[in-house]
Length: 366
Image 1 (cartoon, helix red, strand yellow):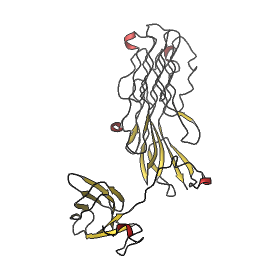
Image 2 (tube, rainbow, N blue to C red):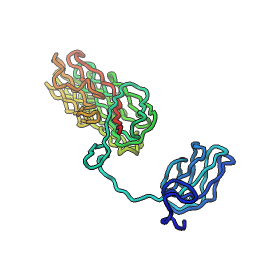
Image 3 (cartoon, rainbow, N blue to C red):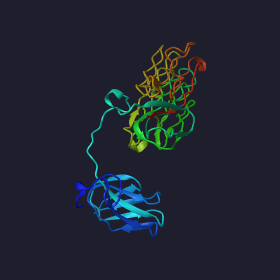
Image 4 (cartoon, helix red, strand yellow):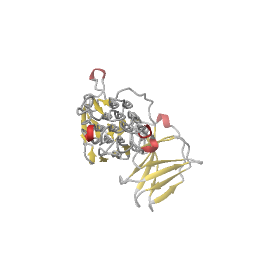
């Protein structure tokens, strides 16, 4: 493109600053192929009618797709542009020249003394299924914590603790308009807790603990339930959790981090009313094993300050021990978001179901 570096802010052919006008096509039909070539660089196709559409910059054995009315970096040479847009629209091609920049850390930290934009942060804690609607005044970047539901503790004596829900953290993910939310519920005994969704990103629920009547269930869950006490060794094992990947809901954008994949502790293993259930796996640690005379503790959850203060999510529930009426010891986790329930003690005493998950969104307004 002759004279590219010497063009004025707005060239004689029209266009915004540092955008060089290349040419226009008329959409006689909704699908047109334009024999327009170009080198690698930043390009934008704008609809004269401001309609939605899509285009492909096609090169030799390679193609880059882009929505209309957006700037895109085409990393290869191309020989044509295939356009899908409403009939009778006019589509205008521009090539952009952009300046070099570098990343600065912590873009959401307000520090007016060095010239950064002061941002006010607003947390939104969503505990029921529906939609998250980003306020019009907010920046189109948000932080998100997606928490699956917690698994139940075993509900007959010597029950294992339930596993906490999985956690997916997204930082500076792009968001506009409305995003669908589904909240995973806490499970009942011998089942797996619900999966929580934020758009198409999801966090698995936790597994439930075993007890005198059944093993801790197998399946796909974030953190495993604890094994039962008062059962033969073959039925007292805790379960391993699942580590989520981009193929299983972790997402690709927003610097995704998964917290989970922990195991439940084993039960005491003897066929004795004194053997304790194992603790459920928490998002931050495995559950401990039960012993003769004592229960296993649930694994600790994950601490996050996304709401503005430090809060724990997705603890594992503690195991229970038969012939002991006081089953509240060591278990202050049960009512927290995504946490596993406590295993039952004497004759089903003090069993708890898991708690529901949540989606916590932190958005920013200048």
